[in-house]
Length: 260
Image 1 (cartoon, one colour):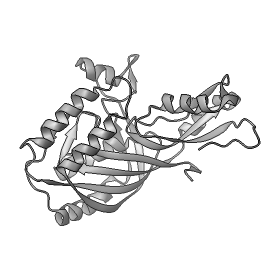
Image 2 (cartoon, rainbow, N blue to C red; image 1 turned 120 degrees about the horizontal axis):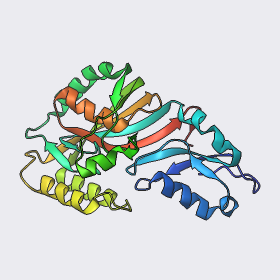
Image 3 (spheres, rainbow, N blue to C red; image 1 turned 30 degrees about the vertical axis):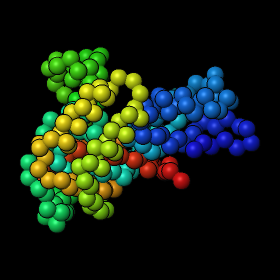
């Protein structure tokens, strides 16, 4: 999705990043298909994880100097939480580190989620995920995670302005594994894909999880800049004492800018 009218270069481009792409890959894919931007300075105002999709703001030329203005804008997302597993990345592109040993009754899960939603609203401190690009002493946090080196994880104040439960779906373990494998294979570069898929296969094909059916819960959220939806998903599981992770994330709005 690009805003080019009559062959004119635009200073702001609204890009719909695909799942599996890194932000840089999304930007360079756009540049390669639009030769007007071949030699023009370009940057993205706000990251999206490889497994996340949706709206990215691309700035060009002189507008790149105003990047901070766009970074501070509020965000809106549609996201899904898979209950039954946690990973070290808080999404499916991570090693499974815990799983639920009990069946989750859909009705009770929904009741407990609705009770917990109000506790997420408002301002609070949120720690950065250990698998993130936030730098500490000149190194991104994910480099500490991969090396096993201890590091004090920083936190920042965020604000959740609204958080709504949309629906709960059931998914069979076989379908879940097929979806996870297909989606992880979209990702290029070194994100431990082979090792992670192997762990997911072991978790879903073995007897680790007793239930043959798991639950995926869809939400909509409005939040301040800097909020990690992956972390919200993980925190929701901690609140309910059920392993949970971000199954999918789609950014739909940044400030006044939105996907169409």
